[in-house]
Length: 287
Image 1 (cartoon, rainbow, N blue to C red):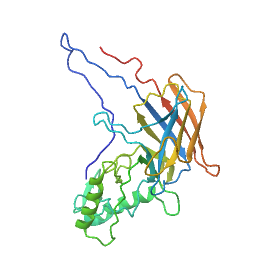
Image 2 (cartoon, rainbow, N blue to C red; image 1 turned 90 degrees about the vertical axis):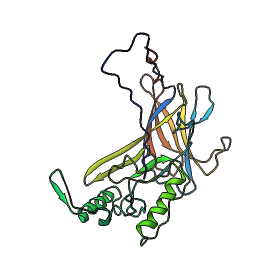
Image 3 (cartoon, rainbow, N blue to C red; image 1 turned 45 degrees about the horizontal axis):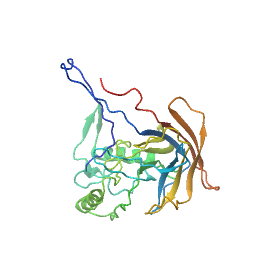
Image 4 (cartoon, one colour; image 1 turned 90 degrees about the horizontal axis):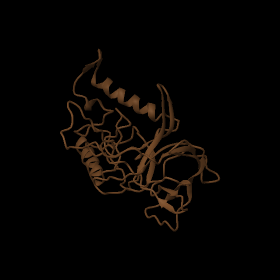
């Protein structure tokens, strides 16, 4: 399976000076980075996703693209919330289609850092990790993902590794955003992209997941409000769906806009906060 991760490009210079007449151009980022935390949210239902909107300084309502690929000139509007990982996921597999929770995925006993594990013990470690993030009888860790309408595959529990591999390959081939969890590093999915997580605390071991990041090419300097709506497969900016989260502007620092996030449904319990970094290009240029 391929890994597709949203990573920031880092430029490093060392080992000598620039040749005379040569220069390095640094292109400032003209958009906005949004750091958000949300608590008490549940998975978005099948056929539904969330859209992010902003009211700018001119009172115009903008549909915000949180997943723009400049090199590909592609936008991907909308996000969705789904369970980050599950023991029932048929695509948590090795390259031959064996489930990582099955000893068959581990052909040999290994020793790492002085710890020896048999194939059964290696599979058990994966099972226990998934159980930490999806504890029985408790709400599981929820991932915030780019919206993708590709339905996860349905695979029989007694499917052969080849059948499972074929079904999962068809799923991931259908979309670059099709999500497959990675139990060995939940922040780096085996396929797709994860923006972050809904607030979650595990007890054994104690771990805290809280927050997600959205980057948009839209410059939101002077933004007055942000809000999320619940939408179906099509989005009409003139007839937006019901509110999921709305916001209240709160005092912030220089070049950072802060919002309190408030549930949009009177019966809802979702809440959180957002910090928008709106002047990231300041001071950048050529040298």
